[in-house]
Image (tube, rainbow, N blue to C red):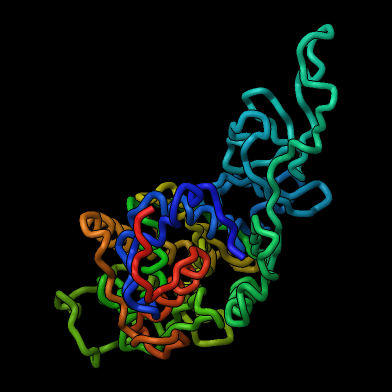
Length: 431
């Protein structure tokens, strides 16, 4: 049963202000991207709801005392490794007056201490120290019945798979492998098949709604159209071998392609906006895919509901975490990695190929701009709808083509379930 949260108590669920004319989510109300009340409800029902959120990689906190500060939706979180090797995550907000406790992005510590009044917490999130708890000279201080155990940092449940750390705030969340389902358990085991090493980070702030990014990730149709570099040099085209895989409920998606990078596509059904035959790279090694998996996939973009993406684009491997800031802004945090047994040549190659992605990536820099122009353009028509019919109507499932938006509809069907929306019904009236 879905809880009723404070934002709804004064009136109707804000998500029900908008009409959903199609039960299969082939029409998405623009208001779902622009309404701040809907955004606030998402934080409760989705990011703090019965889902597993990606937190970090175990390789980022290898030793006792190692920590990273992240965000789950708009909730600040600390994830760290205790001295006994166990992993814990908890809200980065002091139980005293609500200040941020750990302000460093990463590091190693014996305890997390709030700078405001110096309340201290151990690596399990338990309160271990309160200055002047008994006052001074018998004056002031806290009541005698003050119990430290009742003032801990709010914990998350933790689960890991092959060194990937997930967390949830809900006791109702199903086991991690059930949530991921067979195709995505297999994909994580494929990508994290041996010890990894972190190569670096990038951050990108996009002035648009976070769900426009999840739409983008579940829309392989745009890749061979929007990304001119990708098309020009044959990294990915819509007429190549590829498709999409979904979990049993359609909430997660993996867009994939299988071909040699740089392959000639003279049989393409459309032309690029320039004479691509006259364009060449000064250093063509940027496009060389070194086969390193037993399958033929050289491009996989696995989008896990609600907040992460595991990418393989050639030999560049990364995890992207979506961190929501407001209804109009979010951040993408990129973690690039390779394998511990990579030689220097492969590490250099992965770093070279990392230029394909990220905020200024040769094949991804357009995504942020596309999201921002959509977000601005729909502002005046929140009662209108996006048209989502590439790949057909009706139930969603796996696809053997990249020209599809079915994975996008799968995301929205599960989103509606969590948000208490019944697609196909008219708006229920304003809150």
